[in-house]
Image (tube, rainbow over the protein chains, first blue to last red):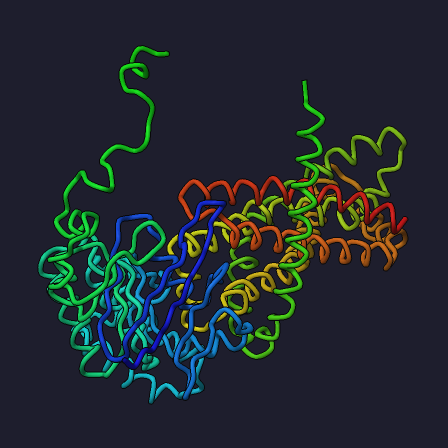
Length: 268
Length: 255
């Protein structure tokens, strides 16, 4: 299979707590790949390793570059910045620049990275805003946007440099059903129409089942299951079943580890 | 009782932070080319840190000058030396009070604004988003703010001194009847260019220190509401202590 990103035997620790312990994961080119898992399994950390903001303790995160694969962990600062121009990322809370209006937020990467004149920047920004349905909101400030609109603006901004890889960090959290439908459609359409590769980090099982082509479930620092969403739903693994069905108790216990309850109450 | 271990720990923490901020300063200076490539960004920050601080600086300068006029006439009249009021007020303001008080006010007005602005950008992932967009936040956000602050403080100090001297003149000459000619001529007689240079040198050093502490605390703020608040508080506390310590060191070195 033609992969854009290959992650092999990835180890990473944060303050002695292992986040990844031998994670293997491939991101196929041109597909929407979902990375799922309970909260705190390091899904966002994984995105930060793909963007080169964090480095692996051991193992490799490699990205297709020309004919071969480049290990992101070995790149120097300038090379990482060059690499990031091929990526766009959508943050959970949009991360729009609060002192700029919607238009300028989308124009920001163009103004900062390219030397394009205003008369070219304007149509590019308007096209991206039109694609997410918010051309009419170009003059609004980020504080005037709803959560769903903010995320769509952030998406226009992520697309404005025409990246080949789009990363989504929890794109569905906190959205009303209509905004959710809009975001789902936008992710699918931009991926297919623009020929992108998309990585969606999420723990919203239903949405992922509707959206993703391929799906990884991460728990305990490793990929415990992967496959098309329909296949995962029929998984044999208790943990995957618990996760896909949203059961409160199972291999991931409801209770945080604690001592004996009666003794605790008695104050011993 | 204070544990010896906690003193050592505190000292190590302080040294660690000092090292980190010096390293950060190096990083900022390396990215300061943006001030030449896009001077507009720095001008905007001179407006934010400098122009918007003018009211508090001028008001404070006026009252500091007026109180110097009052106290000066009271003290000097005991020696029958009211004529040197102009010279003594000018020396006190140019060499000491001007740079120090302006820097302390600057920390409260502009330093806190810088630290909380950058801290909030950190807390809301705006800095992270820039990194992913291949835009270096140290270059685009931190460096212009540092330069704007470092340029603003010496200018504000100049304004503070001028307003302060006018305040002392108003009280001394206009209200308390010190001779106008003596006020200005004695000032001319006793204030040397080196005194003015001392003040400029101090305020330049304070500008670098105050701006560095503010952007450092903001950039390294823990990305929570509490963390940003803490960064803002630390900016004022650290800046105040560092300014007063630096003031002593520079004065001792120059005298």
